[in-house]
Every structure is written in structure tokens, then in C-alpha cells.
Image 1 (cartoon, rainbow, N blue to C red):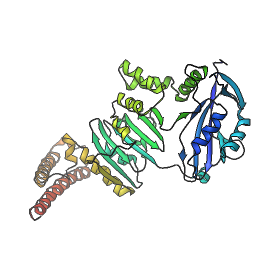
Image 2 (image 1 turned 90 degrees about the horizontal axis):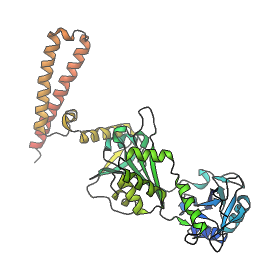
Image 3 (image 1 turned 180 degrees about the vertical axis):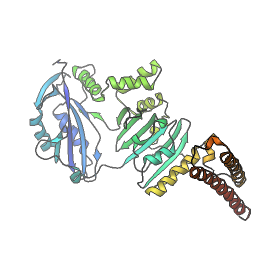
Image 4 (image 1 turned 135 degrees about the vertical axis):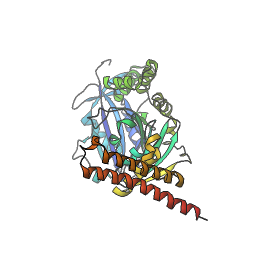
Amino acid sequence: MDSSEFNYLNLEFIFMGDKPDAVQAVRSVLADRRLLGFIGGAIEREKATEVLAEVATVSEARDAVLYRIDANGKLREGSRVTKLVHELKNSTGANYVLVDGEEIDGPTPDEDILGELGSTNELLHGATLKASELVLAAGFEDNQITVWNSEAGLMAMPTYPVFAPGISRSNRPFLSLTRTGNVIMATIEAKRARKDLFAPALTMVLDLERQVILDPGAESPAATRLAELDALLRGIDDEVIELIDQLLSDDAQRQEALTLLRNPTDVASLKRFVALFGFDPRSVDYLTGRPIPEDRRIIATGGPFRSLRAALSEQEREATGISRVLFRGGWNPKALMASGALVLASGAAAHAVMANSQKFAWLPKPARQLLISAWYADGAFYLGKGVVDAFKEKNKF
């Protein structure tokens, strides 16, 4: 067979309970029928074990005909899906077999039956990414965000995933790496239009345990079709190409990024992919066993008060230049007293100008009084804090 028209189906084998040999059982049955495609690693759920296979079909149809590979690596027509699925269910002992997400023998099992997926580890990284943004994106839920700095910007690993769309444009682009079981997903979150909630994103997926169902001979028709299937599954379309063009200005880097997306993925290619876009490739290592640096720190969130306090604390830490004046809580006592006295003096001068100049007559008197009161209060607070901190420091010993 040399037809250029083909498609594929997702076959999902679900075994209730723990089944350590699930992948081998499924692969053996699919290989015995000499099907063309790929099989992923086991997905552990709370109450079940899943194995996902992607098999090539001769054409797109509701009850499609599957490809079969003969002994010489040539393509033949195999069984129809509906007939084969029942055989596969009986042969593997799977409790459910889903075709493109639907069980053909009855209702599709939901999360109540299968249980939740295993825990997901997430790492976020970016040159302009700020810890204060991650705290806000974490919301008011209990969370712990471990952060540290690399030469290419901030890295962070939250205990529970944060709401990435909530991270502002000024922090983009940033890298989101997630690992669930054997699957690592690298997503480069680009800048979004101000009116949009969701931004365009570029994704590369690595299944550390992915393998072919049956390895066809090199340069055989089946090997060619298998490579075409792999490219189809990766889904490189015009939107992906356009986004790469936006993120990379160098033509050679653009072509390399496309090549990496089109070719089979391993850890080395994933690390090269993120490096092309300016991210530290060691970020991938932190999801595959590399120890987190010792100079890390942990930010705790949970509830409105603690989360907002953590966000303000991080904003104070991140403040530079004149903006540090707004965050003086961590200054030393002498600096606090000097800044407090300066604010009081400038407040007195502003008070005099507002009281005697007609330029501010348009501003209602209550508003002027409120402004000056806040001005004085700010100066008095930090002057007093400086005095108290100096006293505590002097009597520490």
C-alpha cells in the first residue's frame, strides 16, 4: 500500500487498580497484530493504570481500517477498529478500552471511577518572571513556592500548579515545565494581547517511556509512514511557525526550533529547545532528578491575608531605584529615620504650598487635608519605626 491518505486513533487501555506490567501487556498484544504506531508509558491514577497508544489508520473514518505491517516492512490493511477493540480488551484484560476518548461498549469511566491523576511537578522560569506575580497567580489557596535565581532569570517550583494565564505581560515570555509521571511538557508562554486572557503558547512534549509498537525495517514503507505519523502527532501548523517567528529573530534558530519540534523528542532535544528561546536548560534537569540549589527560599501562601502579605513582601524585595521608597520596611534604622524626617519635611513644604498657592484651589479642601495627613502619617510611621528598630538593635545584647 502506498496511499498518501492516512490518519490515526488514540487507544486508551484502562486497568482498574495497580498493574505494573500494563505497558508490556498492551505492547505485546498490539505487536502481535503488527499494528503501526506508538505506545506511551503507564499513567498512574488513584484507582487505575492507563496506557495510551496511537495507531495509524488507512483513512479517516468512524470505523477505520488499521494499518498492518508485514514481515518485509510493507503496509497492509488490517482489521476495522470496532472488531479489533473487542479483541484487544479480551487479550489485554483491560477493564476499558477508549477509542478517541470514548468507550465503545458502554459509558466512558469518569474521574470518580478512575481517581485523580498522580501529582504534577511544575517549574516556572523566565528572565523577567517575578516571584510576586507567582504569588498572585497562586491565588488564596495553600501553597508553597520554592524560588531561586539562575543566570537566565528566576526559577520557581510550586507545590501545586499556579494559574499561568494570570501572570502579566511584563513577565512574559516565560517557560512552564510540568511533569506528570513519565511525561514532561515544556510550554513557552508568549505575550498576549491586552484584551485576551489566554496567550499563544509553544509546546513540546516528552514521554520518557514512549516506544514504537513494532519497529519496522529501516527505509521500509512502514518506517516512512511511521515518521509521517510522528510528524502528524506533533501538529506543526502555521500558527506554530508564526509564533516561532515572533519569539526568535535569528533564521537559523527558527529552523532549528522547527526541526526539534518535528523530530523525535528526548531529554537532550528538549533542553536544546528551551535554550534556543533563552531559558536555562538546567530547568529540565530539576524535573529529572537534579537537586534544587541550596540558596533557594520558600514563599508560603494561603488565605487572603497571608497571600497578599507574601505578594507585598516579594514586591518589596524586587523593588529597585526610586520605587524602593515605597517599600521601606526592610531598611536599616538610620535610613528609616532619615527617610521619615525627609518625608515629614517635604510634607510640610507641600502643605505650605497648597495652603498659599491658587494653583491648587481646584482641589477640594477635604481632599488636600487627606493628602497631607497621609503624607505626614507615612513620614511619622517610618521615623518612629526607625527609632524603635534602633532601640531594639542597641538593646539586643
